[in-house]
Image 1 (tube, one colour):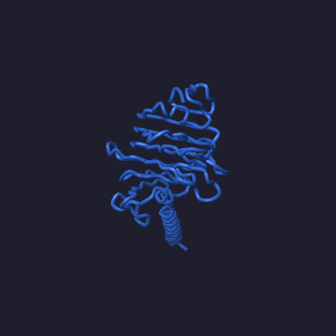
Image 2: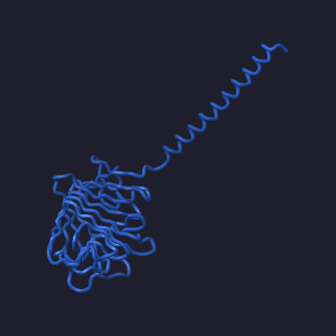
Image 3: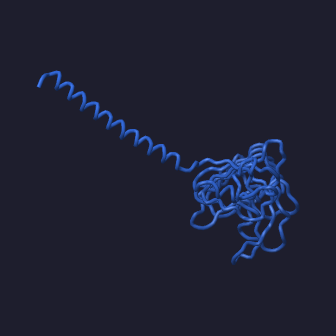
Length: 243
């Protein structure tokens, strides 16, 4: 066999090997692309309109959801969701976060209100609660450009979970994290609840562009009396000088 013939044979084998490798790489790339496309998007943004929305809709600005819970549930476990309020929202139940990171926002200058009302939960607990967010695992919650309106608390005993944010059970996060940016508080009477309730051993509270009325002193974090200096509380991280 001549040298030219051997070279031609080797070239043919090499070309066949290259074609095989290219074919396998194309298959691998296609499989990777399909897997990436099938993976859920962990960061979501939805709109909620409690009056005109529909929980079977897309959650877009043109087709908003009706409830906050639907927007949270439409986000993968462990993901982050920004929920834009198209109108004022009345919260009279506990929103189960299931480890998701939640940003609840109004458009700047729109004057959106989150109106917190009381409710009696279903089941064995017959003590009054307030509209709230049930934090778990890696949950952190941010409120942006909102007026948060607290109710006049009912007389008598209130639930230990009568708080805007609380945790409970085996999924309770080690740290409750809440950030408020450009928010305001409205008190519709004597409020006896808490901003951050029980269930965690550590608390992080950030207030930016948000004035805390004196009536909330001692009601910001469960178990901390009014006038307590933040520097004297080892289990709280906050930019407030006193609680």
